[in-house]
Amino acid sequence: MGQAPLSPEYSSGHDFAVEVEGVRFRFNAEDFASRTGAAAVRLGLLERGALGPAELRDLVALAAHGRIARPASPLATHIAEHRESLVADGRDLVHWLRRLIFRGAWIDQQISDGRIAPVFDEAHGFRYRSTSTGQPAADEPSLPDWSAIGYRRVT
Image 1 (cartoon, rainbow, N blue to C red):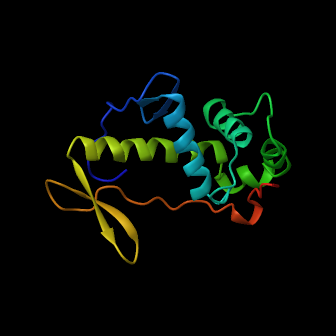
Image 2 (image 1 turned 90 degrees about the vertical axis):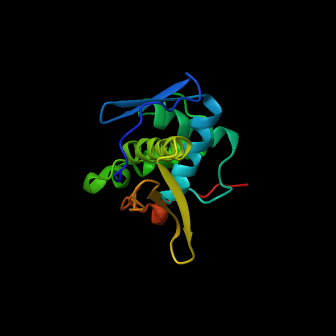
Image 3 (image 1 turned 180 degrees about the vertical axis):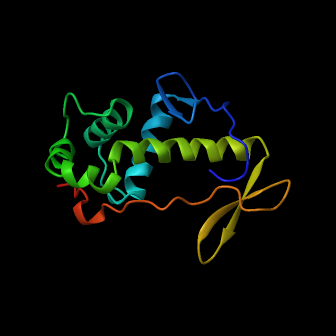
């Protein structure tokens, strides 16, 4: 996650927890749901605006528990139909959802602690730099792209 040290301080509530490399962050339901939806969009699983309340419940269940026990939307069926593609080649959807949820909270905490600062670059968008050294601090991970099998919400 870059050069700044991990900060185990992030907590917006106690509804959900995500642990990466021994660091656990806690989230309230709204924060977790928002980060989960954003992660699914970044991975190409969903288009912006394609997430209704029922789809969001299914996605949150998947990210939080690794499965959708009580499907609430067609998204659950879509994920089940594409399960093999969503775990192929070491690209596990649950892993990547959790990783991006954690990464977003980590970046927010590092900014809040004054350890990194966002810098906007026209060509690449936001990048992050250490406030003490000026060096890049939150390397952008190479993400799987599931847009070819992405969910399209029927309205």
